[in-house]
Structures are given as C-alpha cells and as structure tokens.
Image (cartoon, rainbow, N blue to C red):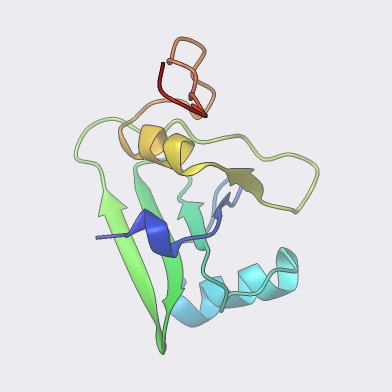
Length: 119
C-alpha cells in the first residue's frame, strides 16, 4: 500500500491516458510532457477513457511501483482535460477522496484544521 509519508506530492494526468503503457511509457509522459522528474517521491496518477481504471506510478528507493486499480462498477470522478499539458497537483486528502469515488473538489467536507495548541 502507498505510504503517504513517503510521498511529497500527487499529480493527476488530466483527461484520459492509454493505460496499455507500462512503467517506461508512463515515466516518459511524466518527464517529456509534464516536465517533471519521475524519480522524485511523487505519485503520478493516470486514468483511462472509460474512467474505470487508474494506474499510479511511484519511485521508491531503487525501483518503480506501478499500482493498478479497476472498478467493477462505477467510474472515477476524473478532471476533464484542459488546454494545458501540465498535470493537476492535488493533496493527499483529495487523493483519498478520488480513490473512494468522490470528487477532488468536495464542498461539504470538513475543513482541515491546523491547531497550534490545546485549549
């Protein structure tokens, strides 16, 4: 399972991606299209056209992890493609929402609290 403490950022490839690509093909997209480092401690998340499958590329220590998830029913609430080729950066919390089938733009979620001290 993905340890969020080992992940700096999460990036979503907007629109659809051909998921026949494996590690090398997805890493090439990260490097050439997104102009990002696939060897950084980030998650790069890709979705197919039907929005029922995702692949997550993650570098750890000395090799890549390629996570794959297929939904039996339903779809992922994936952001539409924009005119920009840059990926959408999301928080760890938004990533969990996405995996749970929720939109990354939850309007009714409790806001995150940063407490400085206990009262």
